[in-house]
Image (cartoon, rainbow, N blue to C red; front, side, top):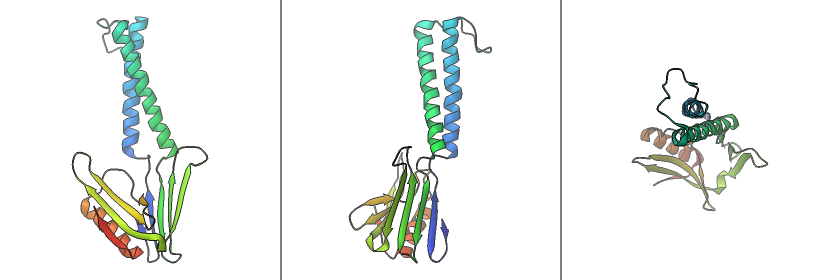
Length: 183
């Protein structure tokens, strides 16, 4: 969060996270391996030199391996497209001098790719903090408007520490001069 006395600018990392690069690479390598093993059973030629394929036959093992390989390769290309398009990336800008909040995000390509929301400070009811623990922890900061909209302000990445997200939400509520709600 970049801040001075009149403006808070918060850059949101979308799908260009290191974990997406890693998962895309793992799926691509694994998918290529499965595809080559399945293709080797069909061609009866060992395309993977360090693996003995004599125990596998094309029907049903080879077909299943080709299917899993194609699926993993397709999924890895989809992940790399998300990274290339930077889905979910953008920024939050809270400008105290203009009394305006600007929220920008990138979506899928098309005529509505760029999502740009502008709110006046007068239209803001509160800042809401959602903390859920468990197997899938959820730590969100929401901007609540007077017309009952709840706009997420933080990115969906690895959850921040509870103390860090509480401080971020309370600082933002103080900056906007609104109440802080907890859930």
